[in-house]
Length: 99
Image (cartoon, rainbow, N blue to C red):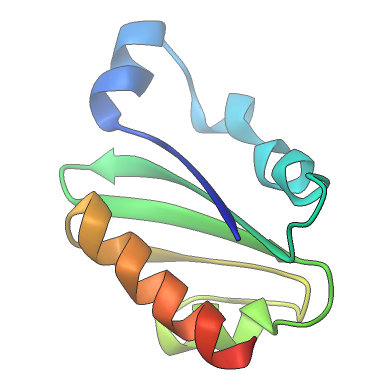
C-alpha cells in the first residue's frame, strides 16, 4: 500500500486545483510492489477527498462504499472526515482486512 496526501495549506500555497491532481493516484499504483494506491487531499480542515486504485486483490469500491463513496473494484473514491492519521488508519485497516 502506498499513500500520498496534500494538506489544504499545501494546496493553497502552491495554488493547486483539484483538476491538477487527476491521475496522481493512478501513477502511484504503478509503483513496484504496490497492490493499492491511495491519494488524498484536504477539501477543508479535517475533510479529505480520497481516491483509491487497486491492482486487483483489493476491492476498493467496497471500502469507498463503506465510507459513503463509490466506484469500481479497481478504482473508487470517497470523502472522509477526521485527522490525517485517523483517515489513513481507517483506510489501511480495511485494505489490510482484504489482503
